[in-house]
Length: 319
Length: 320
Image (cartoon, rainbow over all chains, first blue to last red; front, side):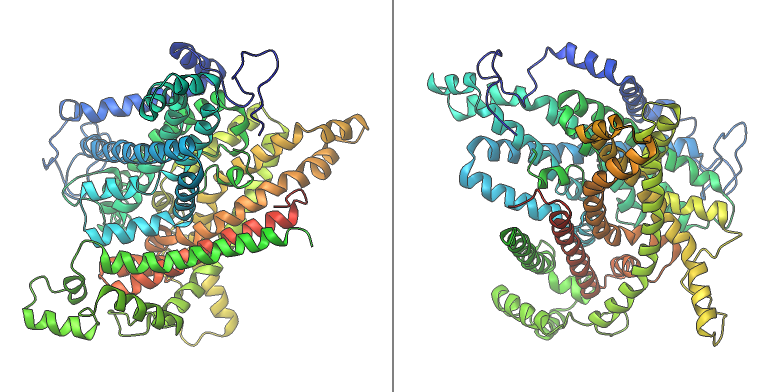
């Protein structure tokens, strides 16, 4: 990718960097180009609201036995009861709290690590860059689900551990994308001028570079939320989640371990999976629409999620 | 010869990664927080005598560096320790499990590739239409559903038609080779189908994007200008070039599929390496867990290398 300035543009604006936009303008641009992003965002927001308001919205208590084991769906209990006679809708609402908390918190960890490493590597370049990118390469190759399982198993089940272990593995893509952006922003004239006027590294990074990479960082982070929620479900299903906290993954695990299948209690499994899929889908739609709007060149590789994300394009040296 | 440097560089990187993985495996199990002796003994409040005996038996009284050297030596001899569960060598158990996993994963992957290529090509060809939107949304949905949930859905829907647990029918005594094969295949159907469903969405999106990229190229325009039939253009000009990124992405994903089997094998009780990980976790069988994790990492590294080399082979433009 060339970093030569294009004739006719303001000096310093390079061909591969999206010019900065006003904040409101960007949101509208994303929604205009991909209306489905608005749908995705509303779904995620709705789930966040449900999670926050669970104690108010939930029709019954979380530990309240309101009927028989695996009671069928009825007018009082639209999604039936679980193996302890607890209302499924109540469980799903409280489950949203844990699942989304893990999703967001793990993503925050991943975003801070990924953003930090990406900025450091891109800004300082040279040996720092080489070392950090090598580390990133190795993290990319580690099979994440088994690694999470091993660490979670060794550390013992707890919410903090789950958040940390997911966060520690999901930062690689973010780091690579941020790094490539920072590398080109660093060469812009205004950044050089800021340096010439005596601004320190910290000031340049925080005031001039971070605002420029923020949109692509956010787009990436939104995609990471989807992966984190997905991984939480997997870990909980294997019994590595916090045993005292109900989450969507745990609901599926309980149903599986406690003979929901042979009891024909589909209502103990089906809604939980849909609850997991909807926010994941929502985050994916939003994240992809943002990435598309920011960098049309990414379109080929924006698979968005679990296993390899944009790795192929990175390997080709396009970023 | 073209790009011998490239091959050497990628192979070198893979070898270093293997070494890093082996070291990481040691660090994770020996040096991380958590008392190795307590973990090994699996007795929460062991007496000091017992702890000393265990430390001596497992060589934990030596320094970390000595332990590391011993670990490397033993690994080089193909010794990964003894499973706590049944006192069998970890290596031979892992071989057996891997041999169970590979055919199931391979079957699922083949189905996923066929499905993904067909839907992806059609989506790209008819881009923007109702059909494309439907196919893309379906792919995204399958991509979002939790793996174990898809497996459970298949059980709910198809439990009457296929066995839902295990690899063979235990009541089938002295089966002939053909009967045994049929038995395994029937048991393999649902797990393999789950593999296919979890992957197909991803593959559709990959193929679609790759196709869209090539359909916009000049040579496709030229081919159309020559008056070739649309289908010929898609098949001969766009599809063949779209296969470049597709094949590599799929090769990379293969490594992760084997690693991602844990959930599917747990649900279906398939005696493969994924279930071995699950059982090792629940029974705190650390030698087995350590061995399985190492094998899974090696598989991923291997397929990554394969993808790199394959890409190099397929795309003559790569020289460095």
